Length: 276
Ligand code: PAF
Image (cartoon, rainbow, N blue to C red; front, top):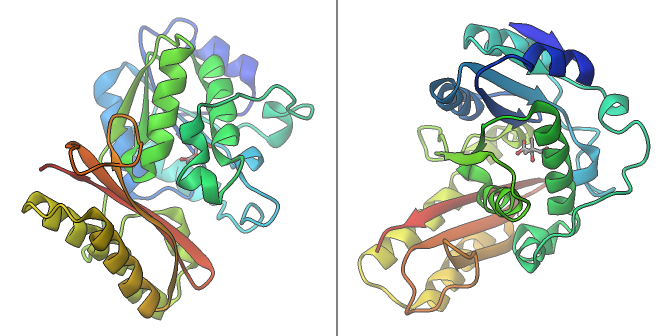
């Protein structure tokens, strides 16, 4: 496995590769990331994983400084998973000057995560676009855990004519249902036990709708109430159309329920697709 930190070395290494599958990450890798790597390996001769904590997608009050950086452990895991190249650019390599060219995203980027994390998707889309231009993969893989991120990257690639297939990997969960996430590491023991409640509330909504319940408002309100009573601060519990991420109406099918809530100082997100 090659570990490459600069753009020109990466470009020359990848020049003659027949096909490239790309998994962008911010490191602190877990089974969720590794399942994306496994998908990537089935798609192309060469698998590239990037590790870069992108300041552009963090607001000044967020956890950019605290975000876990575990490069050595990540590289061991990627080597064990037969990745071809790890691209670990420095801040200076990816942003040699202040990034003034930023992507203007469609209104969906201002909803859900975008409402609570203004500028987040602009930061994500801008770094993903830079990474796409650097790596030039045929396939790129994102986790469904970040459902809206996957949706927006797919829209970006489609509308900007990137010749890249954007694939989604399923969310990997702990035994109690908690979606694996680097931010789970912020939870203390008690919080870790409580943390799967977000998933359980989304599951209740999914099951109710799959059994014919159409009272979307009540289902969302109940979930918010139970989470709040259990000590959470809920940002949103939202039923949306899968193919637009617009708010769902009772006539809609192909839905997804998404949630974001704070458990003390840790913000968790999750979602479940609904097959009614
Ligand atoms: O999902 C992530 O880890 C990040 O948002 C991404 C896609 C690597 C961009 O920084």
